[in-house]
Image (cartoon, rainbow, N blue to C red):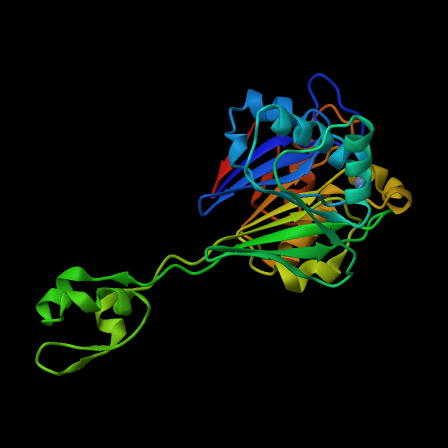
Length: 301
Ligand SMILES: [Zn+2]
């Protein structure tokens, strides 16, 4: 599982601080999460093979999370894209994007599907044989969802040596990987556990931005391999959180601790702070394993 941070800053883009966008590579799928202004330049800069993106997940309709979307859609058109593109985002996103394309007479030549969201409880919005994606309803000034990406468990790993020794027919190997007990050539039933290893535990990634401190999400993200949680402010500016419905680094740390996640990644920093290490230090008062998102940084889990 690789996470490439394309942008991790809030509000206004600057030459060195890009608004929110990230690419998650999970089980060979490439998902774009949020698409702030300039995302397509960042995709090029960090050499992401972005023609492979088939699914884009938009958390909410604040500009710093989706103003790059119409640009990316029209670039795909200019590049002659033929593959389907699916966009998941709040109700209204279809109208917003299609109006801009229509006014410029720029209709896509590839199938473009919108999956509009308006539920306030977690919904399964994508699933294939390897991965599932659920919404994580958040608490922000406008309707907002985070997203929980989960790997499905792999097949069991075959212990070939052992299976040969126990005189098992090779044609059973696929059944064994799926967890079945099988008979060997002598007619003896061999329990699956004797000839397989457990597969590695499935990984998961919880993306939570933007949101006020919202412990209601904890049961859903419990035990996630990685949690990205916004930390727009430090505690010294806690009073700004109430009005803007954002979180502090410490609050992100508390969510990570309550949910017992593996790693916490902080991001969505307000432009008022010069030293991002202060965010790490503050979150580490309550949770040890804290990483700082930076534009262009790649995390591997
Ligand atoms: Zn926002």
